[in-house]
Structure formats: C-alpha cells, structure tokens
Length: 101
Image 1 (tube, helix red, strand yellow):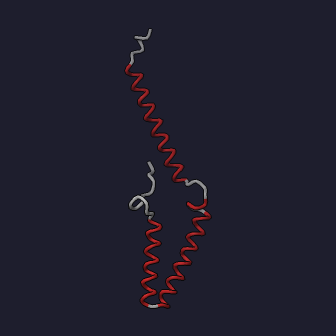
Image 2 (cartoon, helix red, strand yellow):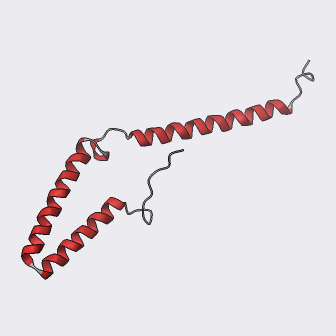
Image 3 (cartoon, helix red, strand yellow):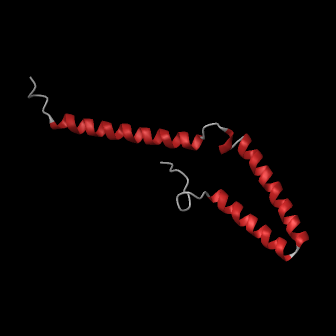
C-alpha cells in the first residue's frame, strides 16, 4: 500500500531542507569570493524559478489532486472494506443458520 512521503522531524519537508542547504552554500561562497557567490546565487535563483514553474504547472502547487494521494486513499478505502467484510463474515459464521428456523 502506498504511504505518504516522510517529513523530517514532522514539519520539515526535504524540499525545504535542500533549499536551505543551497542558500547556506551560496552564502558561504559569497563570503569567500563575492563574484563566486553572485554566480552561485544566480544559478540558485534559476533553479528555484524552474522548480517553481514546474511545481505550479504540473506538481503539488498546481491545485490538482495528486495521483499518489488518490491511490493511497483508494488503498485505505479497500483495506477498510476488507476489514469490515471480514468482521461481518466472522459474525455470520458465529451464528448457526439452522437455529433460526
């Protein structure tokens, strides 16, 4: 059954962790050499704009429901229906149909 993606420490998404590390690396490069820091910052900005475009157009920020989330919900629904059917069948097996007549 599909499971939801993990978050670090319950609130930090890996996307934000990678972004934070990239900004920290850009800052370190800028403190070492300003021209190198500007180049790294420009590259980081281009990657961020591309990621934002793709996320808005096709991904999680587009507002459309995720196929993965829908699949996980269907699997949970099927599991719940199976569990109910198993409980119902056990309850019916516990009573003897010959006693009712």
